[in-house]
Length: 509
Image (cartoon, rainbow, N blue to C red; front, top):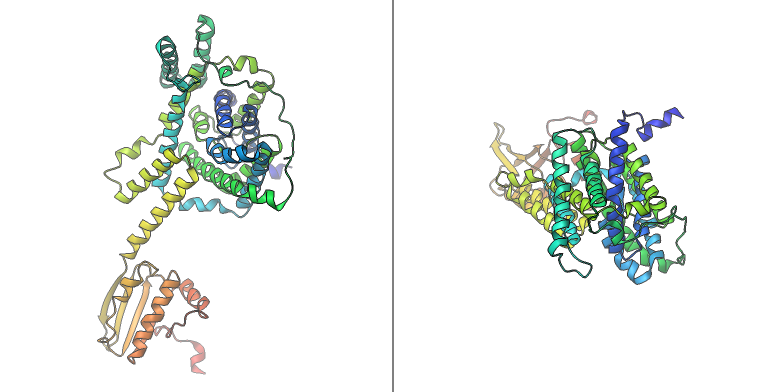
């Protein structure tokens, strides 16, 4: 049994007071968010609360990033709202289970390493956009149920409680870190409202959270190909959005804690959690950057905080609904505004003048797509594609050729920079086929043949020399370049492939 304990990272040191208090704080903050995201998806509040419990508990135990919090998220809610409206909640449960299966497969195939392809400007843009979304979502708390803005005494009371919460969260850590500032702020505002009888909006005014243990329930949908055709597009998007948001959150928590999480393990955990969420009447979800930042800012670094948060959330639902429903929304609004301010990468604004214009463009574009479309997967995908195109363009301009003729009258072309689809045009312009001597050496010591376009370019240049009766040698091709040429032998014939520096033993025979 002991040899398997390392898989769960329970060997790390745990500050039990910090972990438990931080978990309690996170649980309080999870309640309104889970309810809000369920309502966004057109589902009952308990569907969001059950998802937050299952997602948080499973990923805290099995995940690849201790201290990271998962639950029902807005990114998933935005995806499934159409499915819930058109087909009903049972199809949502089925789609969430299928999304979990896809995430487990992605983790087993070790696709978490693809996060290396996400450039830092994309992460900056993602984080900044998410911070703006978190902030903008809190503005709804300053509105009445009919969508009009609060006014008069109601507005002053609500705003004052929000500012008091923010002030405590900002100031208390400068005095003491013995207790999480966010928990103290919530309890202080809660005590003031109860003690002074202040009339202000509470969690219970949004929806009731009273319920029981999440019921086990297999989706009541026809097991047919038609059902699969309906749910698969939603499941694929939920899986993609969930993995992207979870792995980006993992990277952010890695930077904060100066440790390293395990992306593939987290992908499997997220998938397992979504499968169980769909089976226990939950809407599914992924990692939550806001709650994860609350947790890490409180000093939590172990799995215990996430486990406590999930279990306390269930306790609230089963036993403490009457008390929790009396928690003022102003306290939770102030907490989430501070999370938004802490999430935003203010340092990215100071580097605008020092960053390449292309990086600034990518960062701003990802932020705008995140804010206006609320599609985190699309935002990251757009950012990666633009960054890749900029990278390809820059490298296409870097190919160089140093030319000289040796004492034997052989002309050498020493190539610098990668030879790929973007640089083949400049590569072809480097050669003077008609005026070159009878023998030419193209040296790839400082270059690499990258793709099929590069192979075709080599084929064409050797053909051009061959047509005028001249001999060309390809020299110092790396082993992987030679393998690439051999693999393409049936498609493209590279006319001359030899290295005059080396002699093969069988030549003597």
